[in-house]
Amino acid sequence: MSTALTHTGLLTARALRAVWRMPMFMVMNLVQPMFWLLLFGSLFKSVIEIPGFGTGGTYLEFITPGIVMMTAMFGAAWAGTTFVQDMERGVMDRFLTSPTSRGGLMVASMACQAIIAVAQALVVLVVAWLCGARFDGGIGGIAVLLLGVVLLTATFSALSNAFALLTGQQEALIGLSQLITLPLMFLSSAIMDPRLSPSWVETVARFNPFDWAVRVGRGALEGTASAGEVWGHVGLLAGATVVMAWVATQAFRTRQRSA
Image (tube, rainbow, N blue to C red):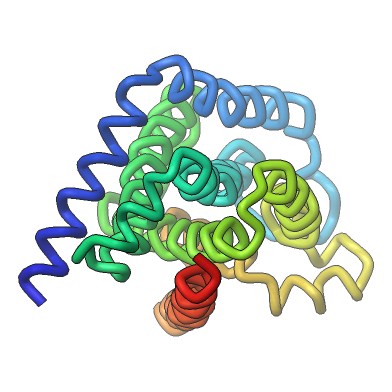
């Protein structure tokens, strides 16, 4: 166990160093959520005046947890690109022929993405606060939101890694990312109260892991949702993470057999 933890720590540091060498990549990853936060928050601020819109705050406060989770999911969907690059350069084969922990390889990728997502979430929250958003959930609410960010990131990182291991193609991974993330975003409560959407959208949202994360973040930040509702969605996200981690593990074994 200690060896696996050591390998996970070293591999996580390796992944973070690669990200650190590309500061422009981090900046661009923050530009998009800032664009959504400020543009959507301004363009659609009158949406809260529609009868039935379920919030007592501003639209900026409503959309902030959605933007945080969108940033986390979109970033995690690209996690598999590192595996693809390692496979193309032969680094993955060297890992697989060495005593390197296979679980450490997978967990390190998920941990790296989670660290980045948490940092981005904090930046989004600060910008939203500077623009006038207020979060009654306080520090505890922010901590629960960050827990949702970590679980959502882990779920989609594992899915992205599994697909990368099975296909080994950057183009296929890009296609999957676009195929999955945008529909999941619109079939959720990220930017619109689903009660104002067609009933089938609300039904689909109940089974959408991305919507579970948005509800965790919104309920925690507003401080008005019941503990059962918030932690129930946290439990669903944790279950999704376990399932996706298992899928990624199976993909790793398939890759090893074909190598």
